[in-house]
Image (cartoon, rainbow, N blue to C red; front, side, top):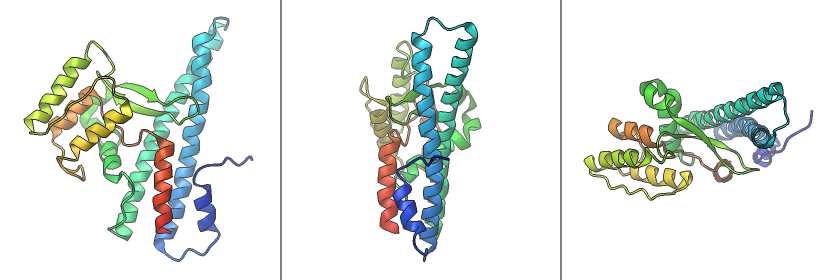
Length: 243
């Protein structure tokens, strides 16, 4: 079976080649191997998605059966990238708790943002069933980059965007928190803007008012990791500092 490289390989090799002397090192090794597997799933889903997307749009000669098969492959890849991204977030949150229990000074990059997203969009999504199931689930990323799903209800619908943005700003205003959203922000910039605003309520994002959460779900929920490769680079640098 052909070995596929990943950004975690150097760290995994380094830890595997020596006797692990601490529980932190053992956890880093398990964490790195776990995220390596998920990263490769995300990469594979992206690699399958783009060719099928392009083929579906440009091909006029395929039979109905071939088009149905192509569409199904596209949907499968889209679902796979969503599931693998959610698992990526879930495992970072899970291991974040593990590191904290070993040493309460250990905090993975963006741990609070990841936990907030995980709690609202993944774990307790039935608490916001109407908002989450009516979302427009789109992908971000260009050819060659890991695609991510992100939650958007009316932010990308021109006829609904002004009303949704107005409602979101009013909710923040009621809580005496300033927020201004420029038009045509990338989802990455939008997410950074929103998380920075939420951290003015509570830096650990544990005490965010329900009205704010629901307003975000009605407009567009921020994504904690918009560039998977850049985050992994940041994460590996942090893990190396611990080992």
